[in-house]
Length: 285
Image (cartoon, one colour):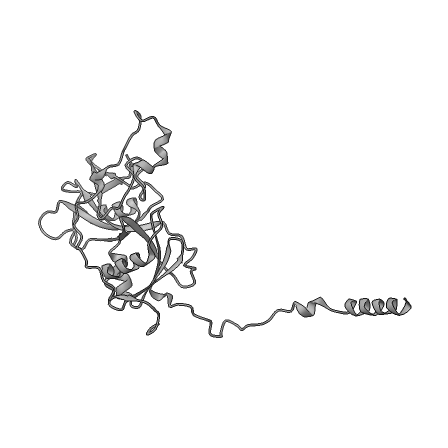
């Protein structure tokens, strides 16, 4: 019994002398000046999702979007998670063509995308904006000004650019502006323009290639049948401030389905107008 007690005492003494810090030391893996691991080339990447509550057929989607975009250097498409995709292009011209051609749809579901900036995590970057060309209708003489176009673009969303052909020719039925729209907010229908002499008009907006949106709440991504706002009122009192008249009449070219532009791996590469001052009064009705 004495020897057994002595043995237990020796073990306890040895355990007490063990330093747990020795097993928990940090390891220096290098400073900022050392080359870091690069998982993908993020210079020409878009990350996107489709506005739908249904599952997306990934293989069908990538084989439709690639020939629709026709990128000269190809595109690599990766599924990051449920309804979140990375679109890696290999030249600035290709990625800019896709950005300029927005909005895009798959099975009538709009693609919401964001151009990835250096250091951003594609799995968590917010996706809630779409670029549109918007037509500004019902402008009278004296209101067809570049400042009106810019103000309308900033009122609708975030102004990007004006159509270079806005002031070509003698008269145009409408002016066009490219703007970024927040799909979490209702679409803007019209804008009140006032001159200093008291003259005023309503400028009405028509969105080119506008996907499914709600006639009740004005938000892109669902129809009135799926709108929670309609349950807040009785059927007799239900108001629909929005309508199909907000869609511009457009015809988009049909493309043949193919996959010649689709990459399956990453090998190989990584006018001046002088007129009376116009005051914009932004009233949403």
